[in-house]
Length: 416
Image (tube, rainbow, N blue to C red; front, side, top):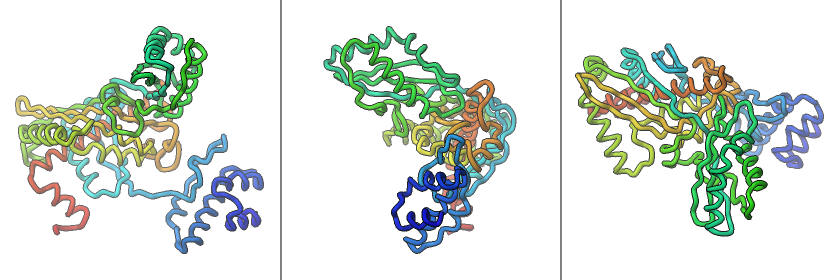
């Protein structure tokens, strides 16, 4: 082991090779990964003449029985402050009862704002519903002519049932295929259900299988240009996800009486309705947003994503949100719609460390029974939390300068 370490520090062994070489010596995969992380960090400390004790102390094991490392070239872990909200009362199909929300964030006022929104919501409870569930991958194909490309789209429509039957998986099934043609190029947007997994790895795997199946069946030349042709659309803000859905499409609503609004925010339902329209629709429309018709949905989603080990890059499209407010009979009807919330309770970062514990707080860690029910439960919880934060921010904005003053007070300990 001393020679391996010496060779590594002398740069004779590459960063990515370290686990495998150590494992060949000690035959203990988790231990080999821990030693490799320690040595990498120590080498970085020596080369840069710095000390990294917190990164060292934040290490946790992400190895699996299949001898994967979780991430490549690990040196330790990263810590983010973790808070818990007051319980929120949810009346969903999968999330029923009171739920504490774990939030990983460095932003003062976020948790306090969420709690104030929860206080109002708990007077009536949150009604929430998942209306769609699918994950998509869109390979792009090239043909010899526009006629061949169009013929292919007809071929897909005729063979839809056969292609669906070609996917044999307990947790992954093909829901639909939509074709989009530009000249000689055709994007095939494959959409799958993926159980409690977010599913990007699965849908990529089965999209590749489908393309191979299609090439064996199709009687004209075609070329796979890219297995992902950006019409999925993954980790990019795009209106196709808003219109057609990706991940979980989820809606939440509540009815808040005027006296509750007055007590909590010192305003009224009519004022909140006006702010919601002018800010979220006129302001957002003027800015040219594709899915940002909301006050700050990404704030809550990001904090829950980081706490529960979600793919943080999926915040981009997951925070597409429509926040609505209507006034009727001295009450405020308030709702949010999240058309492309991409989440998981199994796989990726959800399996390990503090993320797994946060999902346990929510009562949806691991696979659900039936498959997919835990991820839908998480979707309902996130939508409810987003609505609480949206409600609070709009109520806060009704009080002119309170937004600035509350952040200064909670972040800096007093007025500037």
